[in-house]
Image (cartoon, rainbow, N blue to C red):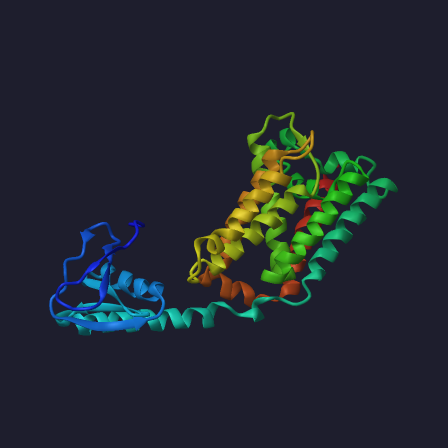
Amino acid sequence: MDDRPLEIRERRPYTGPLTIHQSMRAGLGSIAMLNEAVELFRSMHAVECEDRAFVLTAVGLPNEIARENDHFVLWVSAWAFAQARHHIDSHSAESAAIPAITSNKSLVHPHAWLGSMFYALVLFFVSIAIGQGIGPLNLFQLGELDAGRVQAGQWWRAWTALTLHLDGAHLALNLGAGVWLGYLAGLRLGYGVSWMLIVTGAALANLLEALGALPTHRAVGASTAVFAALGLLASYSWIERFHIRQPWALRWGPLVAGIILLGWAGSQGENTDIVAHVAGFSVASLLGAAAALPAIQSPLQRLPQWLCGMIALCEIALAWNFAAARG
């Protein structure tokens, strides 16, 4: 794209107007002077003429923008007028239709707090069970992400490790961040769908990390789920609104903001498992991007939110069942 300032010069076939010479934005050079030019569009704002000129340039129709007093005028050759009008009308119709389809406040889902509530209850229950000696005495050892044992076939540790924490501070940090990010994700996707994808994405990230790590690697904590929620929210919002006509900063904002938060919060602390955080963010980002595609979004949103929430809870319960049975 040529972003050089537009050249202002006299347009000889016509007396009076000064032409803002529109360059070929596809990089083909300058547009030749028009013969038998006809006015196609005028506006008090140059950007509106430039937007339409870009459409015409893209389809190979020569055009010029001229200034007449306080208006900007888009000129085309007389022979191309009918084609130019067709392309401009089509472009205007598409631009007018986009906000009506995509800017819909009803996409905010109700009861988003339910998913975060169950997330907190699960973490509290597992912590109390370990603290009070409920269940097997070696519950922590049965559930931690032990890379050597995962590589030997104990896949369920990728799920159980998400519910274990080293101390109260570790638990409180993941509770606060997870409840908030999970709530935001629930607003966009629904409390059930969001937590089904968060739990699945975080567990898959743990599984990938364990399979690629040294056999001595061990890890616990819901932080992988926290960054999975961040990745899910960022990518889903990015893809869902990517086709809306808007400045690049707004279009890419959700994804860029998510990556910045990942870099800032995901690398803090002496014993931080950066690989798990990046993996959680990345896997859930892929799930979120897929969930925002129209072919997947529509059937996914038809699923009952309570059913998706139950799937998330059953994933954790099933994993702990496997852990206890082999303990």
